Image 1 (tube, rainbow, N blue to C red):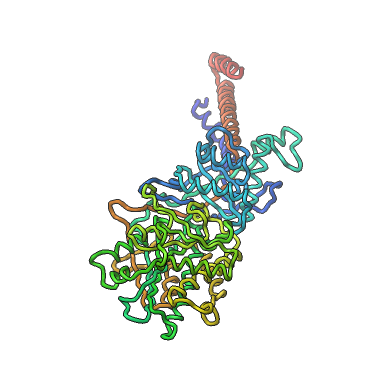
Image 2 (cartoon, one colour; image 1 turned 90 degrees about the vertical axis):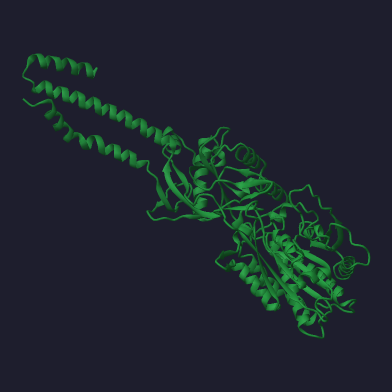
Length: 608
């Protein structure tokens, strides 16, 4: 007679495939697959799955610590199921909401984004699809977007928030999600709505979902950030240290909620373009002894403009130090005024070229004469342009300064900012939007002509004709090529830090280009590097600013629950089947009538 153990071994060998293989098959159904390219339409809901990686580049919103607060997103990685705004409820879900940025231009979605996502954090991650930031928005769209930018710029959040550039694959994925989510919430707009319970199961249980995974580096602070200034000087006729000096200043950095998308066409690419064109034209005038004025012209290109004008602050401290060189001391002794160029291409505020001052200049001073010259030139050639003075006192209670000239004013140095913005608090100074470049070019040329002619009259005295004509005229090709180059690069300061290794300094590629351009127009170039205070840093930036997103095609969480229940039921049935079969086998093989009757009774009880 076979023993119970021998009988059990016989059964285990025969039912192994029957028990284990189906379980592996069911588990395999719910395993994620990496999406390589979505080739179907939204209605067919089929995808091409490949084993090779096909990640998408995503751009993380800013993260910055300042002495008065922490701003931006404090998280970088996530592994979450995607959902659209149609499935968002009033309860927290551990998922990543995916939406298009132009959908935020409606009151409903705007309120959902601000209240449910930013304020109440009802999701665990945010992915915003942007199409074309280089287009003009309507006033209504601009109103909504500026409010969102203001929220993200001036507040901190634990949510990882990323932007991703629109493409066919992302669009089709998004449309698939919207179809499923709308149907699941009773808002289906399918061309062929489900007609049976099987359709409902297919859409809500067996439909595919997508897992969004960002496994990039963890958030880390950028160590030893270093900001670089460039200073060039055109020396006039006479004794260099005894003739008047004028300083033209522009900061090269931009700032927005997404560092990698901080192109800053208006703030401050427009200031840079006018800065370099003025340098190009006046370098020609200074190169000829016949047209060289009796005044020095200093061009100062600063970094950290959006960090409370960090580069300008350090430059002033360095040059006003008692131990500074004699040339630095003489610069300020003979300094008439400093012109700060910022946001000179804005067209939303009408035609305006404003002079911001902390203290109105006295009549007869160089700054007052410059304003009069600007107004005369504008009245003669551009009567529609409003050239006026705006007096804004420095509020020492504020956490930051609003204009670059205020750094000079705090040191009691005459300075002013020239800008086309009618208000210092416009969010357009810190936006990712890039509006019509053709309109910007026209505004830049107009403002450049007014500023250049006014400065020429200050250097040469009254002129009988426009100096900016013939060989000294404004170069439209130069402006166009420079604008195209600047618009190819993000100018966020945390992407333009200078690296130091041993005694060598390594500039960012864009800064190398700017330095080369300045060398072309002046033989006297100084490069100045400034670091933060080791004990109390003025700012702390964090990485990463961009990383990779992987998209996995999976089944819904409801499907996983159903599979789990099905496996549990299946295992119970298998257990009962094995137990009953084993008892019956023992009963048949047993020669003892008492044992046979016992197992027969036990098996009957198990079956019942």
